[in-house]
Length: 181
Image 1: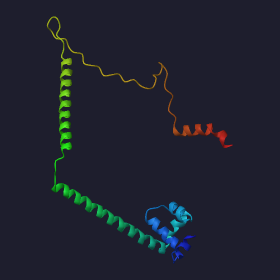
Image 2: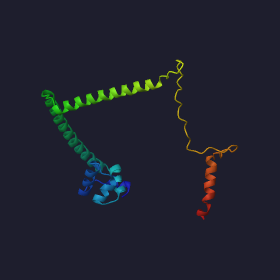
Image 3: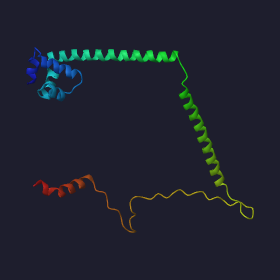
């Protein structure tokens, strides 16, 4: 079917209305063609160029949109009613209160352990007293030396120069020249 034939389509068959309904529900042209037959391009041309098909498609989209909005409003009203009911009747949940109390106790225990670790670190950094009474200077810890994943170059050698993109293309063509023949 050409574009002009799609434009001339004045009376829709049951198959056309089913296709419009499926497209309005969100199915792709491929899925519609698998379901009803025809090529995906056929359904695409109808959707783009046939005024009668587009009118039917828009009507089905409005129906689907209206149903969706009605369902969304209904679920929203239900959720609001549930929330309002919960706000009017706030009963304390003993299990939730117990969980909150345990979490607070655990957090305070962890904070106390962290304070203890910090105080031990401070004590370790204190310089020890020497035998003559003078304090020795504490040697600050050295940062770890990062080790590269690449091996170091031997003395006197330079790394290979990087190739330009033109050189890489020429090299690739030379390597694959035998496959073109």
